Length: 101
Image (cartoon, rainbow, N blue to C red; front, side, top):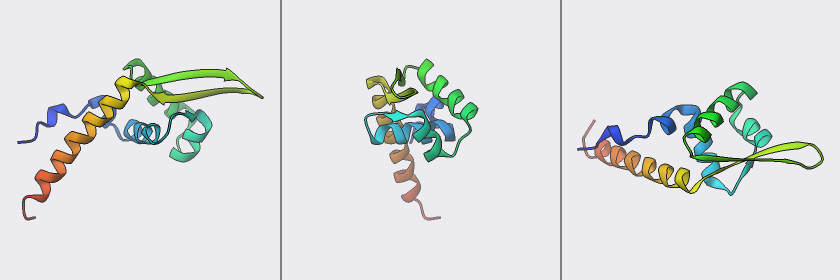
């Protein structure tokens, strides 16, 4: 049986799952690109990123180039947590496909 309690509640929320998926796709993402890709408001995106950062899943880098820029990336802990999350989802999918609907 699949242990649904292993689904990470921090990652499982739709907005945070979207963020984690994008962050897993490349080394880092600037805030504005995340916002554009996810079609989230500044406040909503910041709130989700803060939750992920406080959980130790996402790192934040602030720098001033032509203008201030904030970049986000998965931490090693975040990358492992996302892999673990995907493993549980794969188990759920496999279990769901094994039964005729």
